[in-house]
Image 1: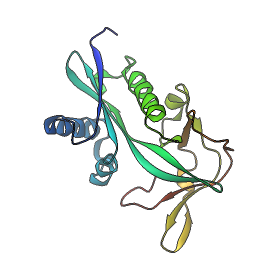
Image 2: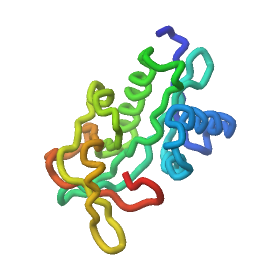
Image 3: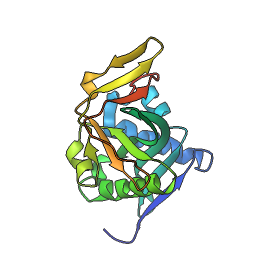
Image 4: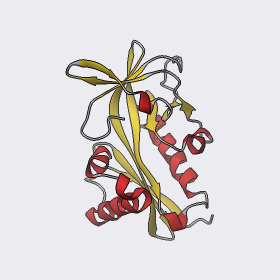
Length: 181
């Protein structure tokens, strides 16, 4: 990788609207039909990281604030959404570079912990993320609802502000449209 790889971090108000459209296109191309309108809405409300190779947008990730329960604790989590690198740009270390920038944002922007849901745990584990081992739940109007399908895909990143956590504790998020996790 040369020096022509750059990352831009900003809120939706700070990023050119044309780049937001292109970033959505990267997610659509990378994830295909499994990336829904709700998934794109989940990337809003925090900061986006845009990865450029020789001035061309090739990668996207978002860190959005969420309250996540860990046992009896509720922490300010930076929830990572929409991590995508164009297929033609993959296998060149760009995804790792993008995720290292995400990790830096989590430490810098006041998150107490990083959280994400993935089917590619080994990729994230190489970059410091730990698989959550406890049961997962979503908080709905009627109470807590078990989400066993998420158990194997949730991961956390401890940052300097992270208190002691036991990976086997229950983990809980608030309900939202589309995928809760």
